[in-house]
Image (cartoon, rainbow, N blue to C red; front, side, top):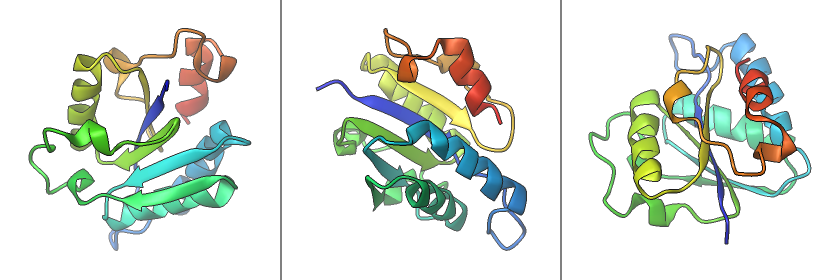
Length: 150
């Protein structure tokens, strides 16, 4: 089975940990990428990640949510078998930048293809962007990056 894996940094947040109004709009806009698709969303238990994942789920009829403790910002290293947790054809992982960078490294070394994007600020994953051979969602790579660099 071919997997499409999307790495998504949580939206910007307020002092209380909740997403800002601007981030809520950005997450909803980003979720449109998954319209009419069945996705599995894995997320960190931290409030801003949970809210980001929930906003995506609200936009996508066929989606399921899974909280994973090792996606938390407090985790210093990912479990050796972390990739085996990611089940589904289209996967969205919502977490924190350091965790996503480590996960991206594991994905790269396993030759899995993935797309990284950052809600709320310019994409920081330029060097690790990988798009499926036929183009993500049928779009050329530049269109995907422009769409997701909200």
